[in-house]
Length: 327
Length: 140
Image 1 (cartoon, chains in turn yellow, red):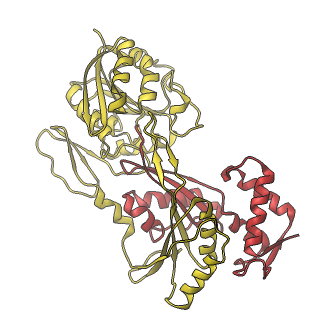
Image 2 (image 1 turned 120 degrees about the vertical axis):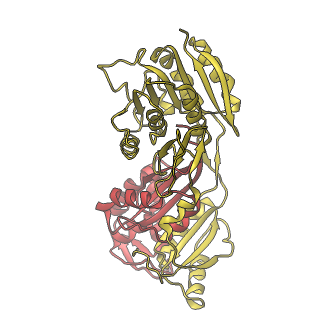
């Protein structure tokens, strides 16, 4: 593929193909000169506690990009080539369209704007100018390969809870930090020190970079790791090893005044005994990443380890539990 | 973090040569993910594999963050390279355009095994043989 230029044109052929035939159709498109193929299966997101998804046995969207595919003979030749395949289901009509020059690399930015979260917190994409009002705290963040862009309800619920509950120069532990957004907000809100861990070492580098962009690299320590009790099923990718606590010289017991974990009900419930040991007397535990259906279960699990659920906040289907450790 | 999936997209593109142009742009643009992040990550992950088609399976989450993993090349791409032909035959079975050995078929099947719906090497070999025949590649 070459770099796009202003006058460049492509022809895209889009067709819905049953899963068993996808490889054969993609191969035939490539044989016919396609530079690239994209395949988007129909999926169903499991409503279980960890939100796994399944690919459905329904047609996938296959999109083939040709540098040029003139009307007439070349298109008929493509159709003949596809018709010659031994497929399990007949192919529907091809949708053929010309795609003109477009700055694709900027396309995603239209989905992402300054977000006002809570009375003080603002999340700003780096390309959008914003002049903060007095007292406002601005987190600069662009979406990338780590979860936590401020666009998700659970991230917003945790940010609002941090803003409401974190007063003074406290020590904060962020479990499952992703992009680092919660740790960064916590630092900007005045935490003395934030420690942030994630089971996925790749996200740690991204989170550290985001902290540097926000000028709070000195206040946050990031490390790949977890707390004792993390279930294998809740690892960011199935099959990734479960990491241990990354700071042996500073054990996790009574290590923080505020603990925030935006993970899932399964992982939160499994880790709650460790959370209860990590939080200092009178400290606040903020948990999200679960839906309304599982909120009672998470609350009960918090109560079972001696935490005192204060309230459950919600946005759409998502919930956030704010619990306090006894003094 | 609470990662709920929005969409899954597999791109079959040349290793080390992704750009924001179609199909990357047209496939990922509507999902609102940072395309340059993907392009940089993909090209870095596949820089030593240039000349091959290396699929990337991209999982896009509800908050428009994403992850991707690279897969083994499509069987047709591996067969074409093994047979040393630039393109397969349009008229399968009637026009043989090249040939591969049984050992090459086994090697391709072995490489593809992690991405196939089977753990049985014989099933995988049969599947690769079928692809070869449909491409007009003779098995010697």
